[in-house]
Image (cartoon, rainbow, N blue to C red; front, side, top):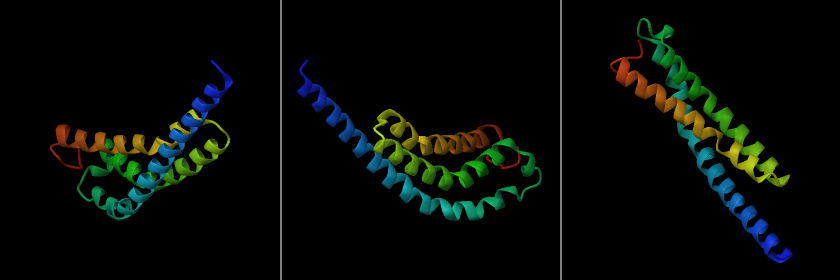
Length: 121
């Protein structure tokens, strides 16, 4: 292959990474706003007796409270890595809030299946 096609592939790869970072930054940044009222009300999950010892409830609250911090950390870190030409690492860090969302959804599904929808399990 010629050197021009290799450079074109690198430019295309970098542009695709830039587009992915822009989309994830906007989406996860906007999702911080609806998470704030949920964080304020998350203390109410521990009102029912026995819920303070329920592992899925604790995991759900931690997932909710950690989301804004994880999102801000991932957005900043992803863009720093992108400027240092580390495309794969920047995509990985930009995708971290997805893991946080999945953990919260798994905790909710677990409570509905095994705890009959109660926070006290």
